[in-house]
Amino acid sequence: MSVEQLVADICRGAKKASRTLASISTDQKNAVLLDLAQALLKNQKEIQAANQGDVEKAREAGLTNAMIDRLTLSDKVIQSMVDGLKEVAALPDPVGEVTSMWKRPNGLLVGKQRIPLGVIGFIYESRPNVTVDAAALCLKSGNTVVLKGGKESLDSNLALTEIIGQVLMDHGLPKACVQAIPTTDRAATSALLAQDETLDVIIPRGGEGLIRFVAENAKMPVLKHYKGVCHVYVDETADHDMALAISVNAKCDRPAVCNAMETLLVNQKEADAFIPRAAKAFTGQGVELRGCPLTCALAPQAKPASEEDWSTEYNDLILSVKVVEDMDAALDHINHYGSQHTEAIVTKDYARSRKFIDQADSSVVLVNASTRFNDGGQLGLGAEIGISTSKLHAFGPMGLSELTTLKFVVFGEGQVRN
Image 1 (cartoon, rainbow, N blue to C red):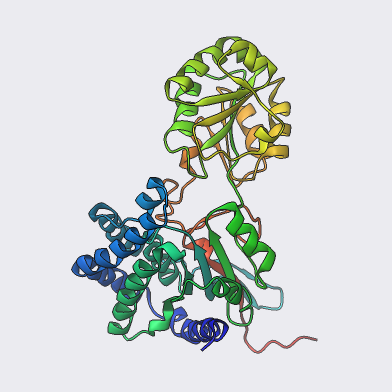
Image 2 (spheres, rainbow, N blue to C red):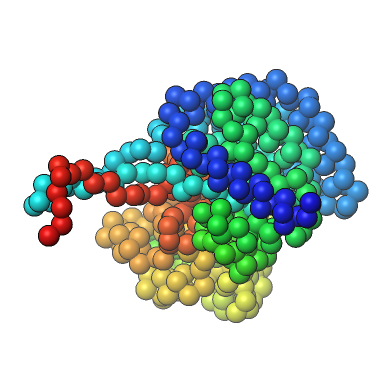
C-alpha cells in the first residue's frame, strides 16, 4: 500500500467514526478520559520502553539536549499527562450548548448550538505528551483526530495511540476516533494535507518552517501561528518595580517558548531611569541586549539592533530594546513588527490600558502581567491544542470551545415561507 493510500484510508476511518463520537454523552467522554488516565499508569513501563527507543535514536542523530528533553517521557511527564486527562474530564462539555435563542415575528425560534468541527488533522513536532493532550481535547469536544507527529517520536506516539485505541474500544467506540500515521515518510504530510474531503481542519504545531509548509500546501482550513514576536511596553505611568519583574519573567522564564518576550518597548519619559536598571537585571540573567541608539547610549552593554532584530523570534536569551516616543509609537511598532501573538503593557492608567487593549493587534493582550500567561492552562481553558493567530475561526489559545463551531437550529410549528 502506498503512503498516499494509507493516509487516505486513515482519514476515511476518522470521518466515519466522527458521526459516532459527535453524539456520545458527556458522561461517556469523561469515562473514556478517566480510564485512559489509569491506562497510562498501568502501561507506563511499556510506554517508556518505546520512548527510550526514540531517545536513543535521537542521541545517535545528534539532536540537542533540549530536543531530547522535550522528547523524553519521564515519570513526571507521564504524571502530567494523567493529570491533564483528569483536568479535561472535569471541564464543561461545550458540545450541544445553545449559545443564543430568539423568536421571529412568524413564531420561528432560531438559535445557535455548539457542534464539533468534525475531523481534525494535527501535525506536531517532538513532544509525544502532546499526543495525549490533543487526543483528550478532541475527544471531549467530540472531534476525531488524525495525528502526524515528528519522526523522532514515532514509536512513542504509536505506543500511546495504541493504548488510547484500546480504551476507546473498551467503551464501545471506534478505534479510528484517534489515529496516528504510522510512518516517518515525508510524503505522509503532503498526503494528509490533500485530504480535504475527509478532514475539516488542519492544526500545525511546531517551528515556523513546518507551519508555513502546512499553510502553503493544505487544501483545507489551517489554524496556525507562525511565530511569537511578543512585546512588553513600559508606559509613562508604569511602576518600575512591576515593569522590571514582568519583563524579566517574560524574557527569562522560558526563552525558547512562543509566549516569551522578544522586544521591550520603553516610553522615552521612563527611559533614563528604567533602561539602565533593566539592562543590569537582564545581563545578570545572561541576556544579550540589542538596542536602538538611545538604548545603547543608556546601556553600553547593548549591541546596536538591526532592522531584522525587530521582527525576529529569538527563542533564546536575546532581547531587542527600543525607546519609543509615546504609546502611539509603541502600537505602531507592535502592529508593524509583531506576529499577533501576545502583547503586554505596564501602566497605572486605566484609560491608557484600554487604548492599548483596543489597538494592539494581537490574540492576547495583557495589562500589568507577563506575556508568559498566554497559555490555555494559565488562562483557565484547562488545556490547549495550540495558539491561533488566524482570526477565523479561533484567535488565541485553542481549548475545548475553540474546537467547536456553531450551527443554526430552528424550531417551528408548521410555518412555510411566503
